[in-house]
Amino acid sequence: MKILALDQARRGAWSIFDYENKKLLDYGTWYFDSRKYTYERTIMSIESLLEDLITKHEVDAVFLEDIQLRKNNVQVFKRLAQLQGVLVNHCEKNEFLYWIVAPSQWQNFCNARSRTSKEIKLNIKRVDEDTEKMSKVLSMQFVKEKFEIDTDDDNLSDAICIGYYAVNAIKIYKTCNNCQ
Image 1 (tube, rainbow, N blue to C red):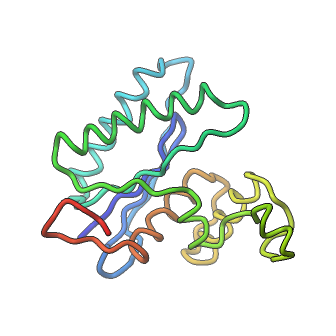
Image 2 (cartoon, rainbow, N blue to C red; image 1 turned 90 degrees about the vertical axis):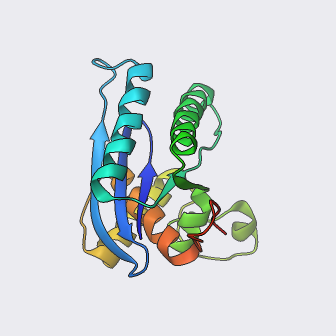
Image 3 (cartoon, rainbow, N blue to C red; image 1 turned 60 degrees about the horizontal axis):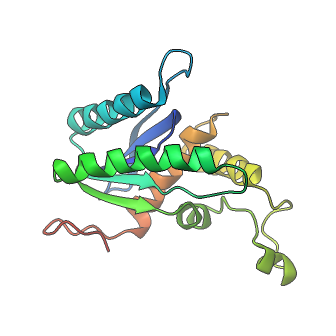
């Protein structure tokens, strides 16, 4: 069984894993420049890319990164919600098995998460800084150590981490349309 993991946005990335062997098979990135693509065109292009990746790699399940509302990014959140809705709808219409993965899940699994304020108060040390940027650095570091992929593209490293998390932590049942 093959799975596709996406870090979806205007600038995004994907990874393909062999689920049973927990092996990274392929990966890549995309970028839809705002000077050439409206956001609506970008969404359509990413949906088409999703379909192409599923078909080309004979994907059995899709893992999308969930979105988060952060301070001062309501417009970004709305756009990512629109994109996520289109991708989920595409999977539903075509009866593709899919799962939405919270960033904290894969980040915890791959040790690519900054400490929470609770961890800081309890003096639990995992990283030196508590910033979103640190989780990006940590995902790139994880991918370099685990897969010997040296990239400065945090979208790519995140997509690989999402896939790694999916093949190692999520049980897929082939007989139904649910992941547990």
